[in-house]
Length: 330
Image (cartoon, rainbow, N blue to C red; front, side, top):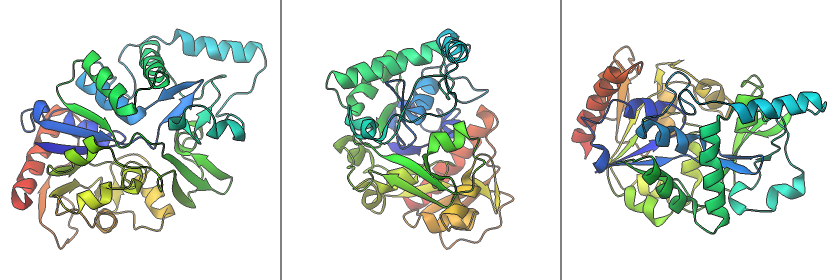
C-alpha cells in the first residue's frame, strides 16, 4: 500500500500513467482542500475533483481541470445575465458575516455565483450540486467523496485532507485574498507577501487520513506552499509524515520550476524557490526524486530521472523512479 499527497496538477500527472507501478487498488490519494471554494452556494473541490475525474476516465487533459468535452450552458447563461443586468464581474466575496455562516466547511471562502469567475462545466457542476446537497444532509466531506468515487468507478481510495475547513489565503499588496481569487481571478499577477492557512490551527486529520499515512507516502511534484502547505497545517499530518517513509518528487529542476506559481509563492513565504528550498520545506522526506539535469546535492537518498510529465510514458518512468526511492527507505 502507498499513499500519495495530491494538490494542483503535479501529482495527478504522476498518477496518470502509474497504474503498472502502483496498482490503484493498493493506492490512496489524500487531496488538498485548501483551494476549495463555495461558488454560488456549491462547494467546489478542485484538487479532489482532478483525481476523481482522472481515475473516472473523464478528465480534460488539456487543462487538467474539469470534464473533457463538457458543455457550459449554465456558465454562459450566468455571464449573459450579468451583462444584460449590468452586474459586476470578477471574484465577488459574499459579505463578511456570511463567511462564517451556513455550512462550516465553506468558511472564509464564499463567493457570489453572479458572473462566476471560475469556469464550471455542466457535468462538473452536477458533481458540485451533489456534493453540496450531501453535505447539507449531514454527511462529512470524506463520506461524500467516497460516494462520488463510487459513482465514477474509482479503484483508488480518494480522501480529503480533513473534514474541517482550511482556506488558503494569499497576502498581497492589495490585501489578503483566497488562492482561487489570486490564481484564477487575477492570474497570479499580484506579488505574494505571505500565505496563511486560515482554519489550519483548528482542523484535524480524519482517522481515514491518519490510517493512510501509516503506509509509505509519496509527495508528488505539487506546489510546496499551496498544495502541501494546507495539509501540513492540519493537526496530525506533519507528525504522521515524520513517522513513515516519505519520498518527494521535486517540482523544480534546480531553480527552474516546471509549471505554475510555486516559485513566486515560495519566494513570498521566504523560502528559496528551488529544489534545495523544497528539501528544506520537507524535513520529513526521507528520499527525493530529482530530474537528471538537477545537480542539487541533498543529504538524503536521491534517485534521478527525466521528471517531465507530458504523457503517460513519462508518468510511468517517474513512478518507477519513485518506487526505486521508496525501496531505499521503506
